[in-house]
Image (tube, rainbow, N blue to C red; front, side, top):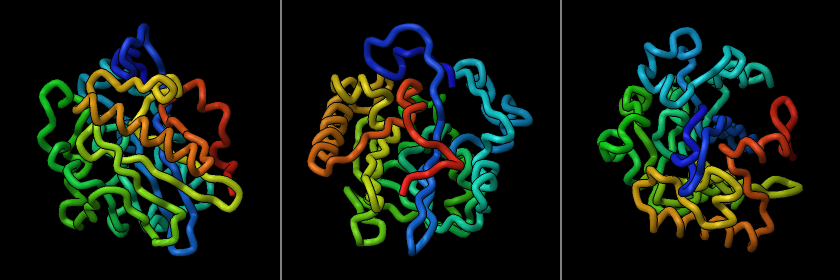
Length: 244
């Protein structure tokens, strides 16, 4: 997406083109996907899917960037994914949900209601049609920090503020650990300076959630990965490369 930087960080100026990532984590008990990107069909007709938001948010995607194409490029199919964790219900995170009807879905308490009935000022960034199919399957709503497999390796971190049920993800690998911010912060500068995004649902909670991530990262010696930071993005490995 290419957005006004003032939407991504308080005091931001100009426009910024940001990546819209998803993260795949292999665990002995399943294949876990954190967020699902944009609607795959938007490659062919973005206006049919997103309407005026295509221009307002500068939405761009190639066929190779569809989440199912990204999975195929590293040897997986959507049906291989066993767990889907959603950071929150903005359109750049919910688009591929319908590809995984067989999976178990996890979301923080309070997020679904806000996704269906967001504050008017933020409504353009929600698309309930993305998560409607999962209503027939059922969500696992969790209240607070949640250890997905009970072994400390993948933990949802409750980080309200950006939205009421916003979440980040702690991932412990064999050699290192990461905190995937989701939209708790939109840049390293936001992390360093406790700067929320302008359309955050609750600014005070957003600031405290940023501080929570910094404290956890220091305690656990984890690397903070801000998914939407275009400057930090090239410093990490990307599929088909991976971390162990």
